[in-house]
Image (tube, rainbow, N blue to C red; front, side, top):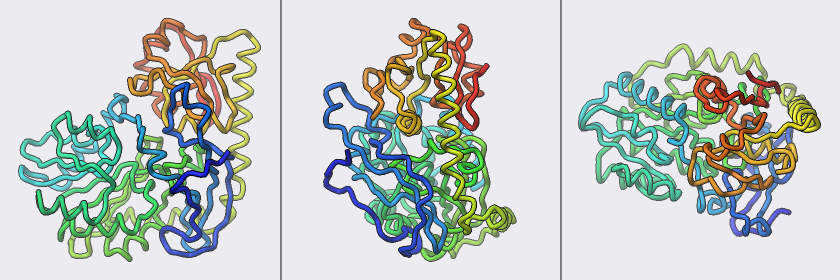
Length: 417
């Protein structure tokens, strides 16, 4: 059921352009918040919300209109970025890249909005950098314990003012897997200009719309992800807030799969606009980001993934196999709930994040266990919910070394190795 929760709302206008014309092209039913892992005594009161995806008819921003109250997502937030070794390596490389590209020096300020447990801040290794995080959830306690300066709360113009007053303007501001999460995105962006000063750089990293469609990566869709980003609607939106996109790139690996990385600057900055910006706009136009046709077949492609995964699972189960799950990311819960999976099919799920161990997955209510317990039970197969780390797990996972096999759901259902 959809709970009557204070703060739940349905938007009637686009977050970027304010239009009220939308095309609904995907419905994944009613689902609980994907990071809403719960204890057994919380199952009875679990809330579900519509998970429907729309395209703005004016600017082409893909977005959710149903907004789950922030407290339902962040009050008991248990996502720890540093629990993934692959993600630690990814953010370490990003910090090194930003340090070199923008010539960071001792005394410069870098800010990570949505810093989680400090994983990206930790990647900055240049001595003397002033590293500041902004984090609304209880995970901020981990970053604070690691010695970082962290402002508790959601980013806003008031938070930006506080950072500038205490530390000065930032040379680099990052928002990795954050920009697409913000409902009042205009207020968020309005806080960036005073924080960036005249020549700071703002870096967004988030799942990319074209990757989501081309590889049918529908599990990146959940209530926390309010928007699904492409450059076509983003550029004019940022320009209306006095920010210029000067570079962009597609990266094959991100927190939720392939990603887009967008670099923006105040109009006063003098970095030239790279050729990649115009190239991406042209690529998106050819793909049809502003036309309805590419969206119309997406639901059918999602249904094919569902049928393929269920066929593998039911065949293996009928053969007497024991099946577990591997990794408990938020996006995995979109998959589990859309497929209707329960402990009768997926008996338990291995997870290295100690905050999730002992809890149940939202909606599907599958027990989460430590990797040590998982290896003792040693299921024949494991549904790889963290499929975007497949290569890493194939080379590093003890489960694979002991003879286990993954059921890989995306981008095409299969067994590996």
